Every structure is written in C-alpha cells, then in structure tokens.
Image (cartoon, rainbow, N blue to C red; front, side, top):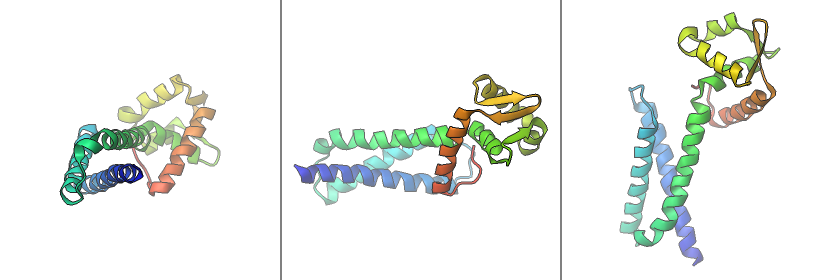
Length: 169
C-alpha cells in the first residue's frame, strides 16, 4: 500500500536526519581527536534503533514488517554518507590539490607547499603518491593538477560551498 511505503521512507529519512544531527553535535562537542568509522557506525545504529522504537511505541508501526524496507534504505544512506565523509571531506590529498587549484596560476613550488603543511609527516608521502598515481604533474620543482585532479577538486569545492567548509583533512 502507498501509505506503508511512505511511512517506510519517512522512518528511514527521519532516522538518517537524526543520525546527521547527532553526528554533527557529537563531533562539535567531543574533545577527542578520534573521529573514526566505529563512532559513525554506532551513532547510525543507535539513531535507527531509537527512531524505530519511537515509531513502534507512538505510531503503531510494526517493526518486523518495516525492517526489511527501512533498514536497507537507511543503511544505504549511511553508507553514502560515510563514503562522502571519508573520501572527500577528510582527504588531505584533496586539500593539497585544492591548494594548487586555488592559486591564480594553478601551481605551487614544493617550498610553498612546505610552508602550508607539515611536510615530513603528511605532505611528502602524499605528494609522491599523487604524482605516482598521475593526480599531479611535475615540471622541475613545480607541481600542478592533472586534468582528472581538476575535476575532482571542482566537485569537492562544490560540496565545501554547500556545507560551508573551509579546510578539511
């Protein structure tokens, strides 16, 4: 029935909204540096269970009936979110590419990159990997984004504008 499908979708969307809100609030309040996938998984599971329990108590939603439709949809949303969170918003490699892309001539010397980032710990291995994987091109001591890197950076910058993010990763 259409009403059941609508209720199923709402339950999953409300669970996901609660997950996002709790995730953002906890991340802003936590003093710990660890913000890994285990915490995201626990928050997502607890949000789903809380909304499911609430709906079963107050709206007579039979969880066994809706479990097979709400859980896959909900956890698919969580999977997309974690891929986005880890893959783009937390990527130091993307930040390096963004620094290059932000320059008026789209280039930086290695010494300029060293001034921006702790070179030995995080930049040098990533610069080498980005160059090896053809995300960066190098002429002399100057690095610049390859065409595939420019596309990824433009997509990432779009989401940074959407979420009002500055530096990440």
